[in-house]
Image (tube, rainbow, N blue to C red; front, top):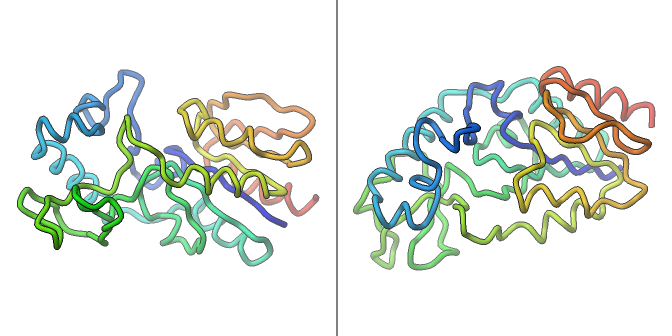
Amino acid sequence: MKIAVLTGAGMSAESGLNTFRDSNGLWEGHDVMSVASPEGFQRNPTLVLNFYNERRRQLLQVQPNSAHIALAELEKEHEVVIITQNVDDLHERAGSSRVVHLHGELLKVRSTFKEDLILDWREDLNLGDFCEFNHQLRPHIVWFGEMVPMMEVAMELVAEADVVIIVGTSMQVYPAAGLVQYASYTTEIYFVDPNPSMGSSERITVFAEKATTGVPKVIDALKKL
């Protein structure tokens, strides 16, 4: 069975990561546009680099939770792909082998001169850290106003899936929110979130709870299909 799993901030929250903005448009106390836009980076690159350095340090101190591990173990019985809005590597560390990052990756950086020059990076990134073409490196994060390069790949994967599992995302932030529309009308959809934005129906099963308790219930439901 082909399973596409769409994950968001709620997936990583139980590992101790605050991965998205709150209702006031703030991210860790910063205005989102000041730390997650090309304009913000141009205006104050040191602020932006320090912001992601803090996020990177935090990520290296946390571990995948039981929901990450349960999704990875699904690969033993099914063809599973994780499509995540999260920029952490917790799915990979849990053992998932196919992970599509819609919004980039915190443990990678890229050249401001050549977008496809991407490097693994676990240390702090500072002004003066240049690529081989002598241009500043920046976080490999999709900022507001930038294209989401993996979006078409994600659309195809959802369209091919027999089952779509949505975990820890409100499905309110576009373009990722539109992905579920590409699922076939025969596709079973499971939605795990404490505040789900959709209700249960003939083809949608909702578990209004956190990832670590909801994901095992989805896996039990899959065994009955």
